[in-house]
Every structure is written in C-alpha cells, then in structure tokens.
Image 1 (tube, rainbow, N blue to C red):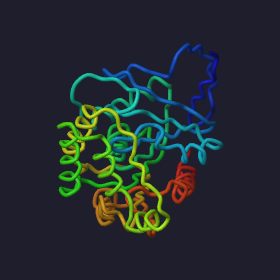
Image 2 (cartoon, rainbow, N blue to C red):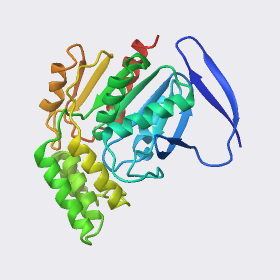
Image 3 (cartoon, helix red, strand yellow):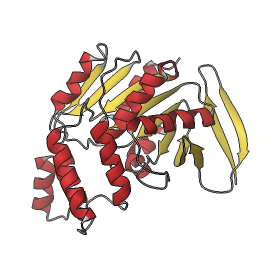
Image 4 (cartoon, rainbow, N blue to C red):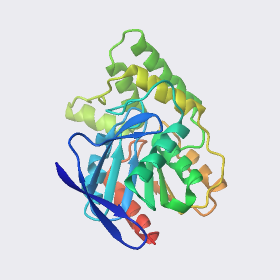
Length: 278
C-alpha cells in the first residue's frame, strides 16, 4: 500500500514516498513498537498512561489532525507492541527517541498523560534540543503510595484468577469524579471498565511506574495540566513541577478528575504547541 510519510523540520516539510505492506511497526531499542501517524502539520507525539493504548487518544486525534501530524504509540506492556522482559519508563522514553530517529523527525512536540507524562518528561530531559514543547497531563513527580497500593492490589487479584474487570473497575474509581458516578447512577447507566488484556504487561508497566521519579530540571517550554478533582493524583502534585520547571505554565481544569475530557484541554495544548513552533 502506498502512503505519504510527512517529516517536519523547523523550515520545511519533506514528503517521502514509501511502500508499506503491513501494519506500522518499527523495531526500536529491542522492542517491536506499534504506532499510527495521522494528519498534517508539525509532529506531535501522544503518550498514554497505565493500561492505555493508542485508542485512548481518539478524541485528541479528531481535534488535532487537521493542524498537526499526530503520532500515537502502544507503550510496552499494552496493545500491539511486543518486547522482552521487564522495562522502565526510561526504556519507553528511549523507544520514543528511536522512533523519531526512524521517522526523521528533527523537532517534535510531546504530550503525556499520567504514566505517559513520565516518559514524555524523560524524552525532554534526554533530547531537549529536539523537543519544541512538553505537555504533562495529570502528572506527578513520584507516584502516590495510596494509588500504587490500590492498583497493585487489584492487579494481584487478577493474577490470582479474578476477572480483569476487577482492575478495570479500580481504574475507573481512581480516574473519575464523584459527579461522574452520581450521574451514571441517576441515569441508570452501566459503567464500562476499560478494556485490559495483558496482566503480565500491566505488571511490567506498574513496576516501571513504581521506579520512576522526576527530579532533573529541564529547559523546554512546558505546560502542566491537572484536574482539581483528581482522586488518583491530587492536583497539588502537578503544582510541584514548578520546583523543577520554574517557567512552566499551569492549567487547572475545574471539576475534572484524573481522566480529563480531552476536548476540555486539547485546544489549549494546540495553542501552546503553536506558540513554540520554530
């Protein structure tokens, strides 16, 4: 199948014709990474959180793809990406950097949600000259002990034979607000747990989250977005990025939990990215 690969530099687009006969995989850093690239314009990489795959960013893709080339990946541990053994969030960051090398991207913006924000931060630490802007959504410098305890306990139950929905229901409880559950109850609507399939990969992801800490300062234009009703990671954790990114911009979303509706912040992210194209 013939397709157009669009490579953005600070000056021009280079349009490269290539032949592709199967799905968009690339061998990077010892992993066979699945990714999708859609849209037109400067490249933006979207990284999701624990248990999420590329489908997490469907709404963001709809909003951004007319102005940006949107690159979504399946992190190690989920989706169609394959790998061997344990990994860290530094490994995922290295995966992203290798992918940008493969795609010929000299500069790019990067947006990370929750766990994905740690990988995004580590990319900006490693190659700051290539990151036009960094956006951290529902982020934290060190994982909260309560959240880690609850997720690990639910995952242990799954590993012992409980249905995967036990973990999915725990994630729903941590990610959504009281108002979300009240509205569902009043409407008599069922709450569907996220689709999770690979307990081994999820354990690897959770181990990686448990080891990751953000301490090093970075010199990259940065936007921090947090919901003021986040039960999984209190909004005050997001504000702590001021300690290591003094000039970062803060956007606090009123009434939002850990899972912030993408339509409520992606337009602001696009404006921020646009300010720092060069």
